[in-house]
Each structure stands twice: as structure tokens, then as C-alpha cells.
Image (cartoon, rainbow, N blue to C red; front, side, top):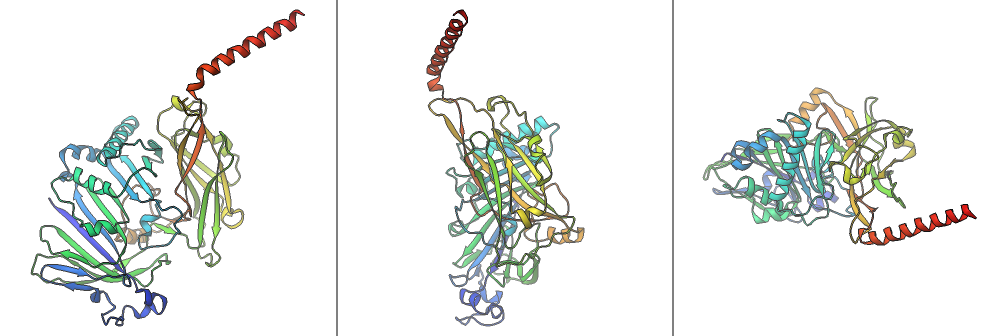
Length: 496
């Protein structure tokens, strides 16, 4: 089966060099007498290529495997052709972990903690078919990943596609291997056990006729051996980074790349400049905090507070064309009242996707949730530093034994959306990190998003009261007694 493999390594300064003079890293010898440039970290033999790493000389790595859809197991071939656009993303939950910038900001700015599946069928004839194919695919993928629990959010409509998310279920990186073995059973999983130990997240991206399996390895402290295997097209890149923290919105890094030949052939290295600019950036010096104001009863309020780190200058001055936007996805048991929201002065405009009847209880609507995109006033960043969104809970289905249940709200995305030129977009599109994945900018052309990241968990829990059917007979009996007593009392008053 024709598989293309691309492995990209990123060399960071040593711990000592990072704290002293990092500019000597790439030109001088380190403490062990080895060259500090990329060639000093590469060892070649007739059978393999070895990329050296240690605790004092860490690496980051991205692995990408590209497969033609026609090569998939026949059971899934036609379905994936009908879908056309699909993204599966997984990162372990990291409660309370401080936000840091990494070389993989393009990916992590998409709020990938937990498991997220986005589906946008491209070859269907109606919205009903669009929804049914999405639902069928969701169920199939959960089955392939051996996930039995129903997603907390079900499936909901996000802008122009369907999404499902899991946060706290017992899910780990083994789902990557399960997907590979189900979709491509005739090809051995290409990563070693040592590779699997360093994976921090992964994604599967279906883009029409191609599927990409991408793994991210934030920190590698053991040397990596790469076999010279002529049976698979394999490209290797090794790039040097000046700092452990990437703060520049628009920068380049240099290094080398090579194609792995068959055994006994020497490698030919090509100097390469790698453009780091991307469509998703973190806004330097800004974070946000998302919460539900308590107590909330049946009418919760979603609050976003914006924090500015005074250690940073406010180095981002948005153009007049930039828009401050907030996107929030909601499960079907939560209502957005557009008439109430239209009166909020902090909002310039808003759009609700998959808007549903405000009066219906949960058991009278379909399972697809909704999404709201808000254009905020710019003054929220500079002056007010916070805003709120009023929400309402639908009457829930009565339950036996319990008088409440917990549902999940994924925290929203707060960001500046700024137009860029076609030339700049072409540069970004040719970057090694660019992927046509389903995300909040998927159906916009030539925009760059500057995210204000959330410092807490990427979801909120909400406890919703409901009727307890185990007490139903008692409640009905007491109600009848009260009605009869009231009626007797009224008749008595009228006759006397």
C-alpha cells in the first residue's frame, strides 16, 4: 500500500544554553564537544538514521502518514468518499496546567483537549441526508475506537458541520491504534513503542481523497532511530529553534530535510527554511477565564473574564477590519433566546446555528445542539474585561431515582479574526503545519485568528433539575388531596 511518511524534528537549545546565551547554540560546540548545529544531532549508518536527544537536549517531533482513501478497507471506502471532510482530534485532559506556547501552536490553539470529531459530508443531496450521514459516521467511529459510552453532548450542529465531543470518559491514545487497525488492517502500525510513549496528541484528517494520521510529540529525551526502509516513501526534516517559547507571530526556522533511501545508500541533505506563521496564533499576554455564575437554577449565565499579563506589552493592534469574535457550542438541553441577546449592548451582532423552538422540552426536540457566533465590541478588551451570555435550560425528561443530571458545555473560543492578503495566505498554506482541517475558520478565506486562550478546563459542568418518577405516585396523590381540599373549602365558603 502506498503510504507517505513525513517526520519533522525540532531541536531546542540545551537547558544551560537556554538560560545563558542561546545564540551560541547553533554555531559553537556544546559541553560534550558535539556540534551545536543540526548535523551534530544526526548520526547515519547503512541501516538507520539516528537523531540524538537527551534531557538536556530535548526534541519535539511531528509524524505525518498520508494514505489514499481508495486504499482503505472496502467497508469504509465509499462512506469516507461520501463524507469528504472529517477531523478527529485527541489530547489528554490537563486540568490546571498553565498555558505555554509550543512549536505546535497551530494545533493546540484549536482547543483540542479531550476527543473531538467534526464531520461535514460533501457528497449528499439534502440537509436531512447531511445529518443522517454525520450521525452514522459518528456511531461508526466510536465503535471503531471501542468507545461504548454515549457522548455527553450527543451530536450538535456547529456553524456548517456536525460535531461530537468527549471529555472525561476513559479514553486514551490507544484509540489511534484502533483506528489505524480498523481502517488499514493490512498495514502494520508504523510507530514503535518508544514513539507511542512520547505522543502528546494526535489527529486524523480526511480531506476528500486523502487521509492524514498526524501525531505530536512535545518532548523527546531519548534518541530516535529511523530505519532506512525503501518500501515506504519517507521524508525527514530537522530544524533548529532559538527558544523554548515561541512568541513571534511571524517567524522562520532553518534546518535540513532529506528523503530516506534504501539501505546502503547515503542521505542527501537539503538546506530548508521553514515558515512558522499560521492561521491560528495565541494573543501574547492575554488569557481568559470561563465560568457559570452561581447559583443558576434554570437560567445559567455564561461569563468570560479577560486577563492581561502586565509582563507583556499589548503588542497586538488590530486593524479596522479585525473583528473580536466569540463562538460557543451548546447541547440541545440549553436554550439561547435571540430576543434577549439582541438587547445586550456588548454585542455588535450574533448568529445562532441550528436554532430551535424555545418552548419545547428536551424530549420533544432532536439530539443536535446549537452554536452561537458573537461579534463583540472592541471595548471589551480594553475597558470592561468581561461579558456574559444569558442561557436557559429546557424542561428535562423525568427520571427514575434521580432528580437532576449533569450536562457539559464546551468552553467557547474568544479570538480576533483579521483579514490577510492572498500572498500571506499562500505562504501559510505552504507551511509544514498547515492542514485543511474542520475548525472555526474552515469556511472563511484569507483570515488569521489570534486566540485569547482559556486558562481553565475546556468544558463546564451544569447540573439540571428534573422530575423524579420514583416519587410520581406520591406527588399525584398529594396533588389530588390538595385539589379536593381546596374545592371543599371554596364550596364551604360560598354556601356559608
